[in-house]
Image (cartoon, rainbow, N blue to C red; front, side, top):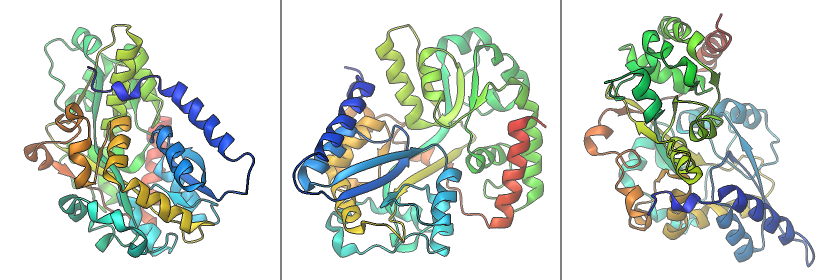
Amino acid sequence: MSLFKSHTRRWAVLAMGAAALALAACGGPRQDTLHIYNWSDYIDPALLEEFTKETGIKVVYDTFDSNEMLETKVLTGSTGYDIVAPSNHNLPRYITAKAIAPLDFAKLPNRKNLWPELMQRMEPFDPGAKYNVPYMWGTMGIGYNTAEIAKRLPGVTVDSWDVVFKPENLAKLKDCGVYFLDASEDMYAVALNYLGKDPNSKAVADYEAATAMLLTLRPHITKFHSSEYINALANGDACIVVGYSGDILQAADRAEEAKRGVEIAYAIPKEGSQVWFDVFAIPADAPNPEAAYKFLDFMLRPEVIARASNYTAYANANAAATSLVDEELRSDPNVYPTLEVFGRLFVTTSKDQTLIREVNRLWTRVMSGQ
């Protein structure tokens, strides 16, 4: 049986889910509404339907493609959202700006299911997890079309950042499609680590060095995007990407479903990479925080978050859910890394606004190739 059987006919399910949610709002007494702002393609629509059926709360689900897009909206205020889904390294800026509300743990009885060891990894960003509920976690790495890479880099094992960060290698892959994330902080973190520098460096000179390296690669990069690479890998428009673990495993699933002979693999490079956490938080001006608490506690149920993991192909931070995740998924070291691999992973930390401006300026140069 396919590891990613649960993804079958995803787009049909999405369409049906949207229709069901729309119907739930029609007729009868007025329902509460919950507005969620999350990453694209990042939750099973059937779970949203179940939440609505159980609580009578209609879910309006909007999506974004980058932390930068989300942060701009949240820090500006008046988002109209009850739940947002930032990544771990953004949390300190949200907290400092008082853009998200401290949680009332009494309203989250299922919080007891969270995985203590993983929560320790979150301590630098939100001590005591006072502002967030972890959703999914994963790694950054290399996704690739096994046949196309074998043709162009014969005998090369895709286990190192050398494959994508050495221009002589990437030049050989240009013709079959190369995608990098449009995520400045994530891309700079792995580039700095590859160059032997601190992935959380505060020195602008280090980012300038990483920019110089990335500019040597720019002529061979087809596109920078943080979600389009999933389908590009699956349908053969890209043969190699720098992306997120679960996205690449979703691409593998879609390629298998399409039955066009495209085989996708994922590698966590041996030099090390980033482990990240996406979390749920409640904006300080959320219009319906009570609905938000009901949804968060719903997602903290082991049987619910396990289904979310099966759908997204990402690991979750709920210890009680692990045994309920599909066996092939929880035993896959690309999803739940071994202790040895985990030891090579790092988290990214928050940057001050001055450094963020410099990083964004340099990233614009990378994107434009100038």
